[in-house]
Amino acid sequence: MSALTDSFRIAWIDMCFIRRNIATVLITCLVTPLLYLAAFGYGLGDGITMDGYDYISFMIPGVVALTTLTACVSSVATKVMLQRTYYQSFDELFLCSMSPSAIVLGKAYAGMARGLISCALLYAMGLLLTPDLHLTPSAVVLIVASCLTYGLLGVASGLLANSHLTLNLFNSLVVLPMTFLCGTVFSLDSLPGAIQDAILILPLTHSTECLRSAMLGTGVPWVSLAAMLIYMAAFYSLSVHLLTRSRR
Amino acid sequence: MKGDTVVSAKGLVKRFGDVTAVDGIDLDIREGEIFGFLGPNGAGKTTTIRMLTMMAPATSGTVEIQGRTVSGLSDPVKERIGIVQQHIALDRDVTVRENIRYHAILHRIPAKEAGRRMEELVGMMGLEPYLDRLVVNLSGGWKRRVAIVCALVHDPSILFLDEPTAGLDTQSRHMLWDLICRLNSDGRTIFITTHYMDEAEELCDRTAIIDHGRTVCIGTPAELMDSVGRWTVEYRDSGTKVCRYFPDWDGAIRFRDSLPAGPGVAIRATSLEDVFLEMTGRDVQATEEVRFRI
Image (spheres, chains in turn blue, brown):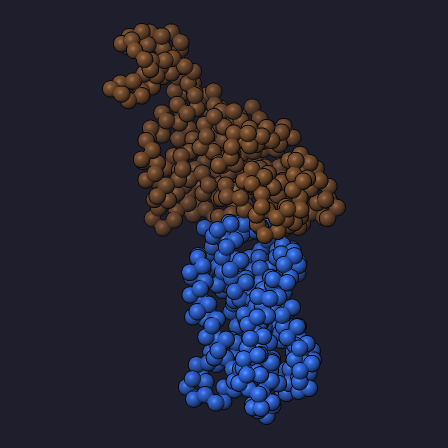
């Protein structure tokens, strides 16, 4: 409980930044999903049905899942890397009696906040655009869980990276492939079996699967849900390990 | 002589791979004193301070703060210490007020108490006009003042200052010296690292000189100067400046009179800088080499 309370203390300064720069934050978080919606949803997908739904109903949950990734990872990773290597303000956290868990969670909340605000707007837009989408408690919980998962991934990558170059490499090799491959804008059923199996390794595939089911009101994909939780635990453990190791 | 030992380090060692940055340092810092930690760049000052404040774990050795052996990130004894790092470690994209409040929040200071402390410290530092400015827009001197307020907001009894005047202009340096004396007169123990000898001479009750990660000598500035000789005769030998040290004035006079008359021969009081050069006995080139290695 103490680590949880402390994590909110850690996050306080990032919330100040988001509050002051809310317009910039929203623009940077929403440009990518809105471009996806415009280009794929209305450009290519008009009139197409996928998995029994019209394309925009199929796609919006995918774009929400994508936003949990893009809005959370890069912002947290960049901030953590800068605070560690350039500003050295990250060291200040080691001077307070805070546990590694509190520091990791607190830093992940900054990405989570960005993701939640962006997803809320996209979800609301989706509810207005198509009657197939539903506002369900499970969808809300899954969006929160997904944002936390990718916030934690951001913390881990920020702790690993020592420069902008390394972060760009991470974005090119991890984030960018996930945005295109994980079934956010197309059904994985259309891909060959071997490629499908490879894509199932990526966490965004499972976030997309879970969010699509929850937002369209279909059954719970238990395997994907379990995979999401495993990724969340793995990113958390990795971040705590890296943080402990980073105290040199 | 000041009070009881409040910070004690025994056999402190820090290795980075096969490089030993700190090599078995023992220190006892007494309550209420200003303790100076002198050394050239790369000597191990910052690494030592990072271990003393638990920012970095020691490879071996122990640190005790007020009689308690400390370890781990969440040790509550950290609430008794404050540190101003060499690099100004503030969040640059938020305001001065938010930075100070953040440090109070991190140290779990109740809001009312934090407000009172902030008002008091901001007044002392003359930061009122800058409270709602973004840190990124402040000059180096003002950022340093904000960092000091942040380090003091939880009212620590021991304050670590890692090269606090590095890169500051003369006015800002003197302002900081006055401030350090004020903080010390409130009963705070202050540990200051510096490579400015005049700073140590001006401020410190006791100083230690560190070189190659080892303590070379320790004592009051007067004791250290006496240890090499109270008086210095400075002269040139084949164009190179040479210093000879003497415990008494008469000995210095006799030696000066034995030298061939010429410009550049002088007798003066020995300074801490003389002690430093005598103890470390090294030129700039060697210092650069150490810095590169570490």
